[in-house]
Image (cartoon, rainbow, N blue to C red; front, side, top):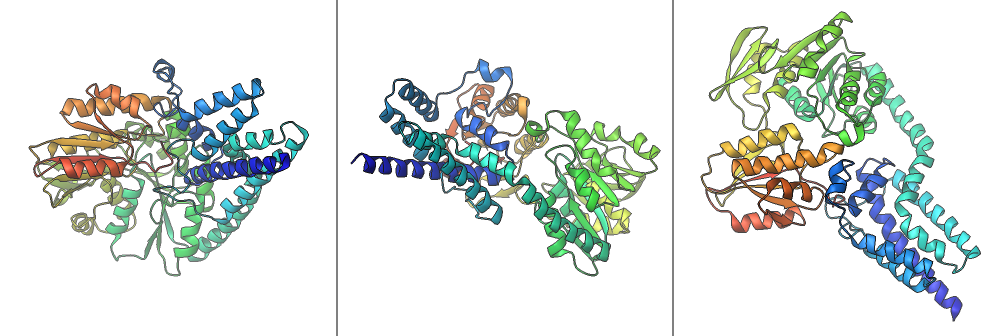
Length: 520
């Protein structure tokens, strides 16, 4: 009877471990298999209102008590008092139900069983089995199996580290194939980086090129090593004359590595800002990491509306590089706004005017226009094509719903700069009724995250907007920045349901940023 009980308990604990493993594997995959993400997100889910910020506010505002905390305390009490059944029950509750809100299946992004994920999970299970086997040497025998339930995210992180050499070898194979393909087809390569504006600038350049040349661009936000090599191997065909490569980074050295095998002739830097500050650590690190794209390029296009980028010009020219300034004021290629028109100027010469395209950023268009000129497109053709540029999905798109409510969709990866623009856009729309901002706030801002989200809420209050807070990630900062009690929703679909039932013709809503459900 005792052995049957032990088997039953062990099976139950293995099921709890499996539930934990699936939860955290999904987080790991969404965070690009970064081992450090396990620590960050474990902290997020056990301290959700501060979002892992390491600032004094985190301690001043207090850490909320979650079911995970309660279960952990109960486990310690059970171990100390030798009440095994108490620890066991607490571990089972944690394994099957915690963190509350982090589902096994996933609402916005289910787990994809890629070859890499299968290997990571297999190695994690082996670690858990080894720990469980050691449990045979202690009493009660399932004590270390219970520990494995709590250790699932750490097993995943260790597995990533252990499998890194294998992943690197496989990645190098794809990179070698991409290098050979680039060498054989030999297109002119345009590399684009920046804290934000990369994808928009890439899409604008693709459209401004028209049919003048055979052009291939990296799809969506395929801007890391895996995405870039995949785009080259799968999409670059004989006859391709221009390859536009979006290049992102989470730290120093990544863009230098990309440029080492996909060297851009033309490098575009769109902006510098506190994006991915949680990983980068400082603005200075961001500046240094983005500058790596200029090392191999013979021509560099800079958004000189950003003072940090304007400061690069003398040094780059001293290195013998051709530098083209782009922006909205004093630049070699500029787009200037007056009334309801954009004026395109190239080296001080007015090329012409177009009506302001809806929901497009002039600086991104100016950078794309500068690159198109360098690739041989005429200024007049560029002007004509600016008039036909397509709106980038989920980037401050303005539509009027059948109900008459004006809807601004700015749900793609909002940042501190885009927040200001979006709030002004909501203020400017022709909607005399209620104006509402629906947002989970901003993420990956490190020690500055609390401050930026409080500022966002203060901006909503200053404009007289209503605020709907989605999720828990930035709830405390948004609540305290807004002062007045805003509405709160667990998920964006809940907020959308409220908007549809509460707002009417002449009202407006701004959906600002969106987070996948591996965020609390």
